[in-house]
Length: 231
Image (cartoon, rainbow, N blue to C red; front, top):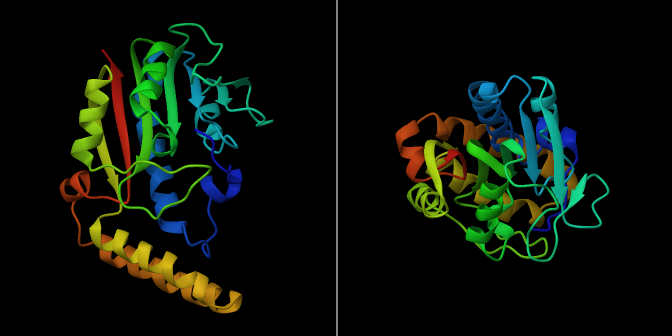
């Protein structure tokens, strides 16, 4: 579950020169839409971010009056509570209306065990917002173990006690391929050349993604966002 936390500004509001600009921007938009649709499960919804890193998405929930608890492995100083070696938090059963999991699932040794902890924290019919990778380069922090198709992610969630309400693919096959090509190319270039080339790649990704449909991205995508309800 450990990962290297990015800065809030880089993940929530990435620079136009960022090699992650398009995917992070689209992911933020998808999360904002999901929160707008789901945050009204309670007048004062409670959120647990399980694997919170640097808490990049806390402002989305704070803007809607939600309480927020960040949970992560020690020694993350941004975490409110720590996750123990068994993958559990000290929080009580059913303490959350919403559990948020962003780019954590691919790093955990047992995705099923992790999702069971998500379910334990949720109230009956509580909402899980989970994002994870489809196509993505290997990025250990300290490990990187899993990738999914949309169908595979939905199956995993159902098997872990959730009903999938919505599955969104972020950037389709063409854009994903160009992202991978960009990530393979940039380390070979001098720093100045990277700054010049990155916007070209990102623009190409934007153009290619316009040719893919939402239905196609559900099956093949760079990143997925699933909205799931605890059964």
